[in-house]
Amino acid sequence: MTTLENFWYGNIQPFDMDIVPGSQYEKASKRKALFEDALLEVLTDEQKVLYNKLSDAQSEQSSLGEGIIQPGLFSWRKDDYRSL
Image 1 (spheres, rainbow, N blue to C red):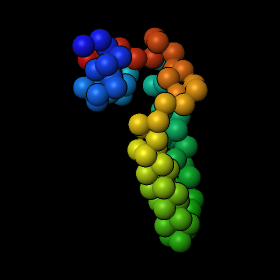
Image 2 (tube, helix red, strand yellow; image 1 turned 90 degrees about the vertical axis):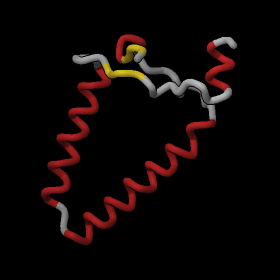
Image 3 (cartoon, rainbow, N blue to C red; image 1 turned 180 degrees about the horizontal axis):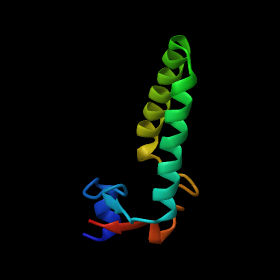
Image 4 (cartoon, rainbow, N blue to C red; image 1 turned 180 degrees about the vertical axis):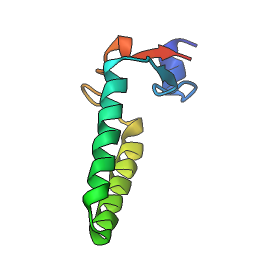
């Protein structure tokens, strides 16, 4: 099977990769985590419930879209990932 066929049949996943230390992706992920922590510190309990619902909806949307190939979906920089 070719790599594309393996991808099509689910034998490989585009996210089965390590994140390269120091990459733009790693830096962005760390910034996101810092901002999220700071936001959660200032939200009320009611606002945290809404935030968690938003986060859950985003995760659900992302998981539903995994099987859909969209323009730009795989536009990350090649140096941000390495194969396992």
